[in-house]
Amino acid sequence: MDPDEVVRLVEELKISTCHEEEQTLTIDTDALQIGEQRTGSCLVAKIFSPKAINREAVISHLPRILQAIKHIEICSVGDNLFILDFKSLQDRKQAFSGGPWNIFRNLIVFRELCGLQNVTAMNFDTMPIWIQCYNLPLVLMHKDFLQKLGSQLGDVEEIDTRENGFSMGKFARLRVRLDLRQPLKKHIRLKIQSGQEDVFVLLSYERLPDFCHNCGIIGHSFRDCENSWLEKGKLTYDSWLKAPLRGSGPKAKYPNSPPS
Ligand SMILES: [Zn+2]
Image (cartoon, rainbow, N blue to C red; front, top):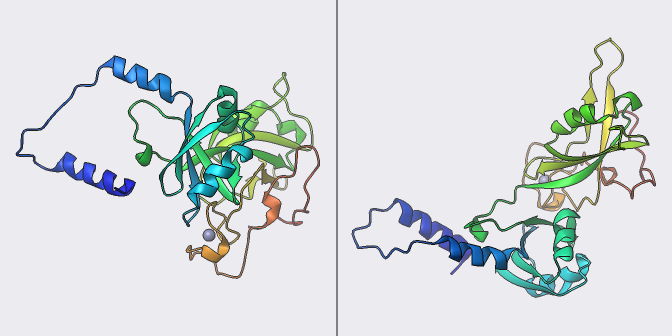
């Protein structure tokens, strides 16, 4: 049975008035604990693509992409949805905390299994990503301000500063949980209260997978874009949103004036 069909039937059962005598079973904590020990080595992976990716190809390529040292047992549980059982907890940690990963140019979003959560009903709308912030005045490259800056983009999970809470270098670096349903932001305008010119903080995303250069959303190409708020053919997003390797500076020059 298709996973979506299972979800639909269960929802119908919840709201229907049942005239039959139901068979019920109370779950004890032992049953949960045994299961949680077993699933502690697993992650659930969702591949962001409007098309169904070949399952065998995913199962074959994913361990190499994740740079796994030991074997990963991979099981398909729906379109672009997989359960990964890691033989090495270090491999699991690297897959979950590293990334973003992509396969065949499509983003992979990981979730941990938690309690009685149903794999097919999991939410994959957000994921953390490291963002490099350029053109930020050095005086503002401290943890308090970077927290405020990052909160304009999503939930801030980590700020890369030195022990004294300051960041020094060409850019500040934040790990922020982004809403994947929203377009990537290209910049943040800082309004300076003293009447000085506004500052444009330019954003560059590390390990950014392919995204739509029409609407800025990850998960489809501009050829498949169904968002109509921008005129097709006028692509406003460019590859400079993809951050270069750390320390090597942007590959492409930003425009003199950030786009509005
Ligand atoms: Zn689009």
